Image (cartoon, rainbow over all chains, first blue to last red; front, top):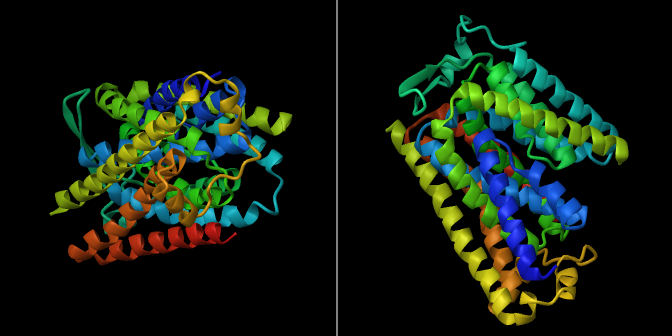
Amino acid sequence: MTPLLFVGVVLLVSLAAGFLGALLGLGGGLIVVPVLTLLLHVDIRLAIGASIISVIATSSGAAAAYVKERLANIRVAMFLELGTASGAIAGAYLAGVVHPRGLYVLFGAMLGYSAVAMLRGIHAAPSDEPPGALSEWLRLNGSYFDHATGETVEYPVRRPLLGLGMMFGAGTVSGLLGVGSGALKVPAMDLGMGLPMKASTATSNLMIGVTAAASAGLYFARGQIDPFIAAPVALGVLGGALLGTRALKHVSSERLRRLFVVVLVVVCLQMIWKGIAG
Amino acid sequence: MKRDIELFISTTLRIGVMLSVAVMLFGVIVTFVHHPDYFHSRPALGELTNSREIFANTTGAVLRGVRELRGQSIAMLGILLLIVTPVVRVAISVVLFAAQRDRRYVLITAVVLALLLTSLTSGLGE
């Protein structure tokens, strides 16, 4: 393969990753890493470095639109980033102590469980539960205009402390495994805190960039960021994210949720496979 | 007034993204202009994606390469701009909440910023 063709393939694949990532609140690493390693035979070390950049690109590209349209709830994001940022530091320290293979299986199992829970609505915050004093005090409750239905959706935010705890867990996983963990953040907001699905994926998009930026410095210092791979990944992902944010407006929350569950199952199998195959 | 915060944050992200896209694109183009063999040579790819290679891993090294107009260094500068964008977003949020005298969120965003800078610098210190 010539370098020119390589750049072309990477751009196209990243375009798809950015599109899906912007829709679902994920970083796109779940597409970028397997394609780079399996199809293009890039070393996993460099593929992970490119994947971290892809998370930041999806996040900044998508959130620029979602924040302006008020789909992303910035107060919820700022409050929950307390959990993800401290979790990421805890994870980075634990990384030297815990064996990663078992963690992949555990992470995979958590994702599988989230998929079932989201499909069945298990653990969902009851819709008649009042938001509680902390949500009011932090003014977390939000609203957005849904282009799919043509209505303004106002939503209360429930169980903020549970959400904060789950985000600490998601942050720890990010720090340990070097993944964006949007796959854990979205269910935490959707199920745990009762945010509408669209607000959950948009807010997750705003948050994952901060989580990834925290560890990107480490990958850069280790020389794991190859500009010949990461720059086309970032360019492709940013283009895809731009298209994804336009598409999200017109998708219903229910369809988005089903698509998310399908992707969760795929990532769940990827992680468990990684843990078993090593 | 609440609307302003969202607009400011959105604009910050947009500027960060546009700057890094421009620099990365320029870097990729310069790379191909300097190395016409990249259009057809197959072995060249192996060198570009060699896992044993340690890529420029200090901002000083990247900036030196940029001054020499090396395409890969310019692309890396664009990547670094992308990395700092979310950090700048959080830093600007602190200022925006302070301007609104929203003490709770000034505190929350300041703690997030401190945690973020801690993990960024501990990463760079390794």
